[in-house]
Image (cartoon, rainbow, N blue to C red; front, side, top):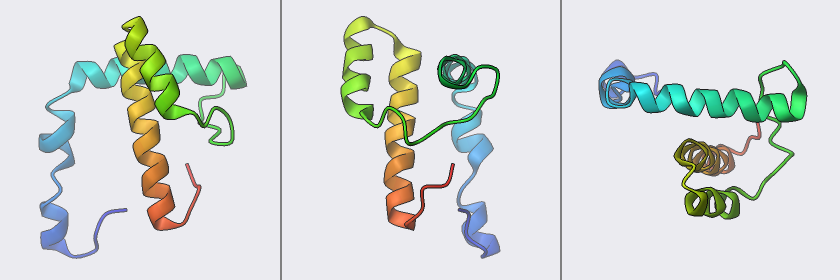
Length: 92
């Protein structure tokens, strides 16, 4: 996931380049993630990637409904699936 080269790793400042920018949004997306997981798995929190693979259609539906946490979750899910395809894995 992260490069092994020290300088390349420093060029990916996860905290200052992402977490620090969006702390409240991350909380809202996490709430969305937990709610969706509970819908499919009860109290377990995990993403079953074999279910609901229609990220872009769902994203647009949530956008029309104004559910921005769900839009963000679906966007992240779509991006993760693309990353998985590039890596040749379906791991979560």
